Image (tube, rainbow, N blue to C red; front, side, top):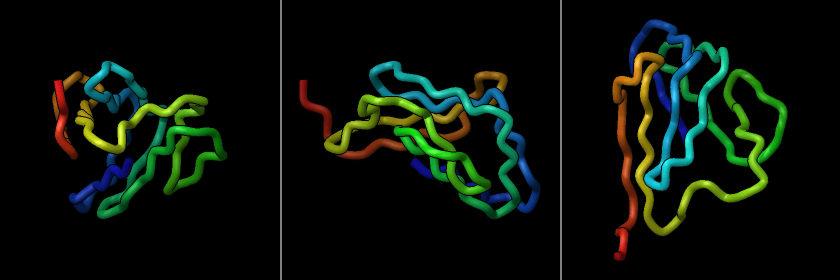
Amino acid sequence: MEITNTTRDAVNLRGWTLRDADGNRYRVDNVRLAGRATIRIHTGSGRGTRTDVFQNSRAYIWDNRSETATLRDDRGRTVDTESWGRRHH
């Protein structure tokens, strides 16, 4: 999953959340995203850098066939939602 700051100003993502349609939630720690920069959020384990953070999960979270990801700020306001694929019921 990638989050891109499209503004010129840096943003602190502390307390922001990324949630999938099944209710899995990842809360971002103290991560500063520079203006016009992108950060990648990985499901598995790894060492965090300026451009990559890790959820340290041993299980898959994101469904490759269909999913909806919602990014909310530290006040719970929806910043962005992205869907892909087609859900079958």
